[in-house]
Image 1 (tube, helix red, strand yellow):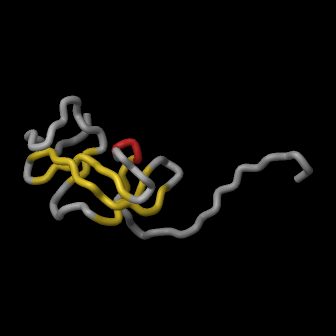
Image 2 (cartoon, helix red, strand yellow; image 1 turned 60 degrees about the horizontal axis):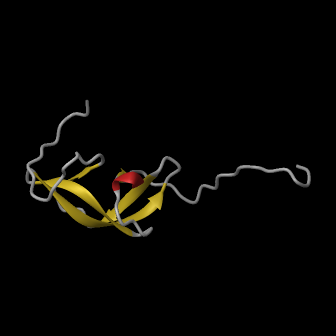
Image 3 (cartoon, rainbow, N blue to C red; image 1 turned 90 degrees about the vertical axis):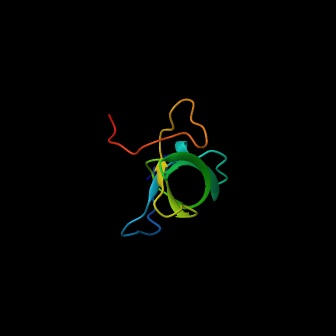
Length: 93
């Protein structure tokens, strides 16, 4: 390298065998540690606050806490999403 040149570097700080990841765009009020997401639980939509950890270079964030048992995170909430609205988990189109 010469003075004035630029380089792009990625530093691997750790690895995980598995992690639940959610797109950062699905999180509202994200402060780097906590944020709110839509979930489906017992067939109904609801908002819940989760805690997050590591981020990856694909725009995803690791869920580290707050997800109720049996709940699924909604990565793309439908228009008109409202607490209590009926919802079901299905295959993406």
